Length: 324
Image (cartoon, rainbow, N blue to C red):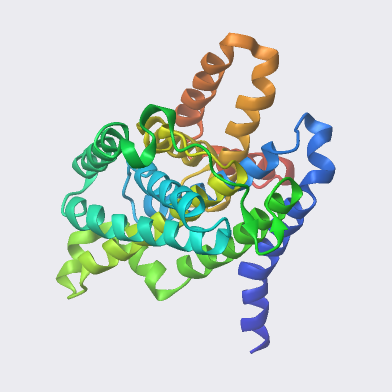
């Protein structure tokens, strides 16, 4: 019993507590490295998105180029709820996340019949179809190119969701979502996801209903995207059409690969790095910042396929003499 408790503490409680301390103290130390109020909130939102994406890519082995579909669907439904129903964020976020779940069941059921590049292209196609619908067929609801504007100030009962209130809300959600992700990955269900990544065909021969596990893993990943999309509208009460665009799906892929696929911690680093680079470092690099970011990404893929997490492991080995 004591060893089980110690293992639980080491595997889950300690990392989650460390994560919580870093995020909760962010407003105090972030400004000393050039950060500013508002950017910290955006980073936390993208961290949630990246954690969920890593469950799909890092642990199940399925690369989606259409995860913006769930982020954007949730964002639009959250915005529509705030605009037409109530400025209370609880029903708005709930409807937004449920809409992402429904969309994930539909897209997952149709795309998970394929693997590899075929799955990736299918998710991209569905994402672009939805993006096109937002700009044309559904523009009376979505605002088309202009996005969904005129949203009221989001409220949590009598608390106005602005500034620090939004930041601490997103931090609390991120801590809970990170803990849940760790529990999922360490559970028998998580082991099934890893087995699917390792050898899906062999797993099917054992009698496991692989399709069911794949769909559930896909939906769980979409839930994280949906929560992130809903929180983005609370952070900034405006729904941009780009929230459905392929470039947003590409961003979360880059973040995950940069940080380290299949680690949960790595994609969080990747998300923080990319947003910090785009909003702070780019000021000093000017128009060349995208070129520099591209070079960093290529160097990471070529020399550090495990991303920032692998770099950290190599540095640790070098300092402790573990590489000898």
